[in-house]
Amino acid sequence: MNDILQSLLSWPLLMVALAVYGFFPGLFARLISLAFHKEDPRRKELQAEVYAVPRWERPFWVLEQLERAISEALPERLYDAADGRLFNRWTLGDGAA
Image (cartoon, rainbow, N blue to C red):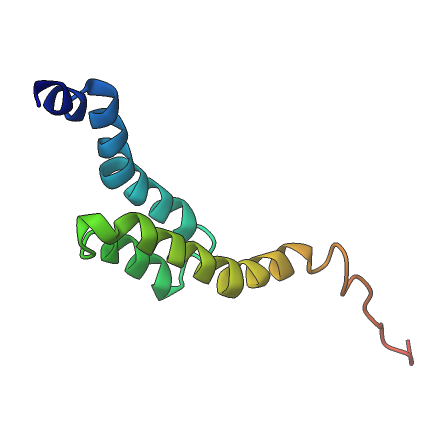
């Protein structure tokens, strides 16, 4: 019994648990929020909402938000970055001039 208790309280396991349930969800939520435009309200909502989710559900919740950002925000950001470089490069001038 003592061996089982000792293995549960080991330092590497404690560090992994702290990282997975404490540090990484907040960090990844902030990185995911960068997919949205600066003035988009979903950006601040994502950062504030991560701490309202119960601690045991946070890693899974953050992954769900990653899927949301990839499907909703990333295409807009990629379109804006490519606009003027890959398409919409030419404009028509005044034909009379």
